[in-house]
Amino acid sequence: GENVEQHPSTLSVQEGDSAVIKCTYSDSASNYFPWYKQELGKRPQLIIDIRSNVGEKKDQRIAVTLNKTAKHFSLHITETQPEDSAVYFCAASPLGGGTSYGKLTFGQGTILTVHP
Amino acid sequence: NAGVMQNPRHLVRRRGQEARLRCSPMKGHSHVYWYRQLPEEGLKFMVYLQKENIIDESGMPKERFSAEFPKEGPSILRIQQVVRGDSAAYFCASSQDRVGFYEQYFGPGTRLTVT
Image (cartoon, rainbow over all chains, first blue to last red):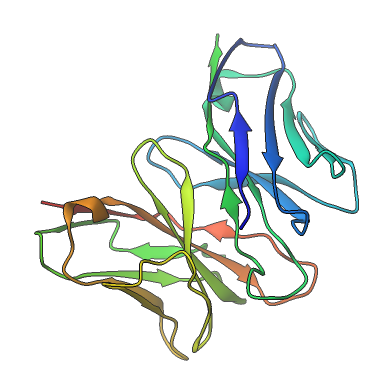
């Protein structure tokens, strides 16, 4: 089955700096890669996703890049703010049919702390 | 535009009792997924259901756990004879049944404590 590795496990930055979180996956059938933000005691919130037919996607201060050959994808947050502090999870999923359709395999999470 | 609803939000059970967790997907969504999150850990897939069908239950323990998504009403995750190791946050997520729309949106979770 799919295995997703995420690092670093903790990341501390100063407000205004950039933050980068990286994930690798093992199953070449995976072609959908969402990122979730989870604040303490809250639900995971989808912040951005990317599909295998593109290499990069941006949404304001957040961007995600994908390298299918190397099987890794990354989350980039620019101009970080204290409210960006949370746990971030990457995930991978195969789409297009079969019994694994829709099943998200998550990374272990990254605790991001943005210091004012 | 109500999101994914889960109840109860907190559930306390003694060892050996049954726990029933409910999930109502977003309006227009017909796919439901259950995930478990142990303290300080990531989310682990348990089961994927569509109306009246279990599509993938590869992440669900073979014993004591069951799930359903009936034609009417919420999806139910049932844990029989709970043990302390079942203490966790259980999240459900839903997605649309439309090609090209794969986003899964999560509910607030049910925090199960087994005493």
